[in-house]
Image (tube, rainbow, N blue to C red; front, side, top):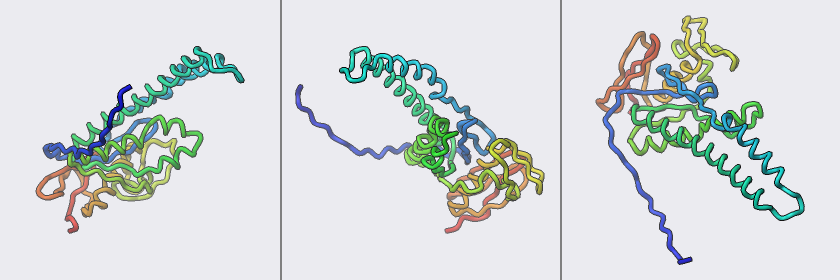
Length: 247
């Protein structure tokens, strides 16, 4: 075999896009891959769950061909390779979904906000560990940051504290279990999907972190941010208007 040389080259990829006049908050989950602040949902495709039967079948075949204390047979090696290829396919499917969704979100939005979840702590819960790993939230948010730099969009990670509990209209803290999927505020009587309520809270937190002062208004309103560009936050009978940007 001929000797070769490898070179590592750093390339700063930059692409210019027109303003989208749109801002989104994203709440990732297990029932849906994510729900945005406009109420749109993307299905969680659960690639590992769908492939579990095939993976277990390949594992059984491999274990039958394994002989303890003897050299690995060719049949065992082939079974092991098939199992590895199946796992690799699931990994590639997850990555492909994360890349496509992240690119689509970033290119169609001026400001993207998401929860800064500590996934390594969440997977310690054995009841949800497999489902959380299968959802690939970390991959998705990493690609959001990457494409944000490529396309010059603003991508903000916000703390996850009380984004699901706080009412996105009046701010009242309404505690609820994971089984409750509808947010009902006893103070302002707002009824909203729990994930959308969280996504709106995530977006509002992100704007505050960016130094933008906001206030609740009724109906569809626009806000002025980042120079002379106009962006929008909209929802079901609720929105926010920027008063000023801190210098």
